[in-house]
Image (cartoon, rainbow, N blue to C red; front, side, top):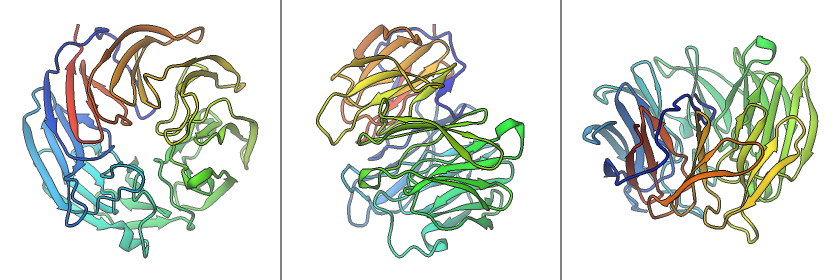
Length: 377
């Protein structure tokens, strides 16, 4: 659904051996599943003359369908490197952007390249951002929204540039579509220097709210609900809720109750569930339930086994993947952390969110292990 939730509810709260496994290379991008196919990205790990690949598998069996490979730098600043953006499937087209800004539009069935564009070149970037291109493409009608310093709107069928915004410090989080009051569509994106609202028709800046985080790590997607936008970033920067009044954003609250680092929180009803803590700092790594309207903490648990992981909400339960591959199923409950199941599901570093599709759970780690678990009841 694009907000970290799934409508699937009839899945069993335990795992057995993986249904299938594959190696997809170094990276942190999540997988996308559509029409029985799974799309993923990875890098071969070679610093010099390395190759990045977009994979297509049969989602049920793991059998390869097609793949496209191209030269790409690893871009391993403070982590293993490899692609961070997630392939996006729209109708019969798969859109993917590499760590160095090479954008591809491919036929979803056979991988045929329909068009491609070098976004680093299009933006006139003399050097890559610290963590490369990390934001995933966003489809808005006939537009493909791409982060490349400025925000770009491309014709999704041809790759031609429709508009670009004013330049800002690069965004590492994916933009969100914001339609307050059911009105005109606005693109909300957290750049490294602040939150930007753009008119989706022409890229004009409607508002800008300064928001800077230590080490230039604004890497989250704004969470949208009605006229409200919620932000949270790491290194104890904290969180804030803003409300659009028709002309500008008005801050409703700001505090340090939730500082998400690698993955943003997930909003269910009026409560946010997410990790509070930082990978590169000492101190507790907590799992928190936050009241969306007030910013108050409903509950907080410290669990060093999970560290700073990721999560998915499916039906009335959460699928939580710890940083070291520990898998936890818990009931969505604003009153307490209601754990149902816990087991080590995979090794390696796990910062990538789980994906549940048609009863199959897909997990990946940074070194490129891709596991599919059968959760069908």
